Image (cartoon, rainbow, N blue to C red; front, side, top):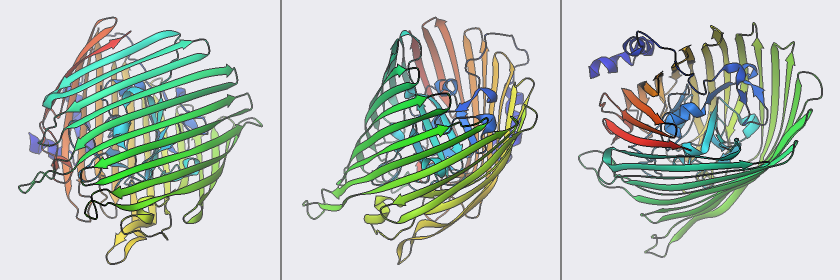
Length: 619
């Protein structure tokens, strides 16, 4: 059975048809409507400076809704996105927790762009850049599902609007806010394999112009291997106030503290790795304006962290800045957006155990960037939307870089949209690359060019929505280590492929979701599968919901070194939930039902079948 399923992963569409034939019910009863079904014409991309309906977006954008996030009962957000968004892949190393440093997971790639560690995909929270100020990569354990209303993913470069690190794509987390008057809350308790425990509670209050939302999470596990324990506690708070019908302000704050252990490679000579103790936090304040002809915002953000590793490494980092943008609708169908952003990132990196315990400071510095951009969008006859953008980025380390983009979307008949776009993406060198181990202060930014074209198509009164995209990504100045020369802008990338997604609601109580991607890489890229298929189904009978999903991965490179090691596997997950009263729901879920032997990081084997049970409360 395992050999058969591994074989069909080479032909993902066969996997899809087998999946549907095995699990599609022979008879269906009409029940309550499945909540939060996405319809293309209803979705507006709001996490960017340019608000636009998905039918008119020239670039490739995927939206993961609150219903899709909540049905997983995951604490960490990134595993929910992996596979569900075409072309996006995230590595894991155990039951829960990603860690940092040697043996860590949480590698993110979109269309084969990401870097090791991830610096080519930009994480945002409500449009604010999120990454560790010294290393330049995001901290996956800091992103919690309970704080997020939805996720908007730009597949392809978003640098013209968001600047550095948006080279391969953008993952924008839109946080929750209280929208109903009065007090509302929910809580979850979840227990499972390897003494894994997950607890969550959140609540919101709204009265008049004031809204509040708070949440807290605590996860811990002994891990599926010796010395792989993980423990995290985080909290989040958001406050909003409507000054008048045209002006709103909000502020939010998040703090997470976690400990993780590296069990070391799972080999005969395996040795325990280091243990980490990390504190991460961020705060942000924004004021938004919304008028008939003018809209925009001013946002200030501050990210900070402190990392301690048992080998003596210690760091304190920061990443703060200001985003300003304003959009003008001077005549019918036209929007002109102008923006400026400033960011300062850096910090202190040292080893407290070096020099016979005297310690050594590797770097204590920062770099700033100032970006100016303009974006023009014009809709003609309600069918054709054209856009073009240009950014000038000024970096204190390397100087200036120009970033252009252009695209079009043609809605031919109300149910069909054709798209095409071109964009340049870039990533500024990190503090680590400029000033730390084997540094090169003369490094230039990495740049890639993204070309894509696609079609959106709806059928049966939008009960079936399809998207097909073809893309080409090329770059020739990636930062790599050259033997005997150190870090240089000498790397190349050339990836091309297709992405396909489908959302179907054949009846009021049945939903199907599918995402498939094929990436042809000139040379294999770490943490990027050649083929990836994700299929899920959700079926409701009365107060019971049945969910099942298949993730089929083929030719995934799991080795971050120049050595290529590819694996293929199939994961089947399932969940049953039952709402036994207005306020409470119980659920049981199982992951890796086929008990597959696989790894996402070389020599870090993943757990076999795991089982979880829990209770959701809503009040």
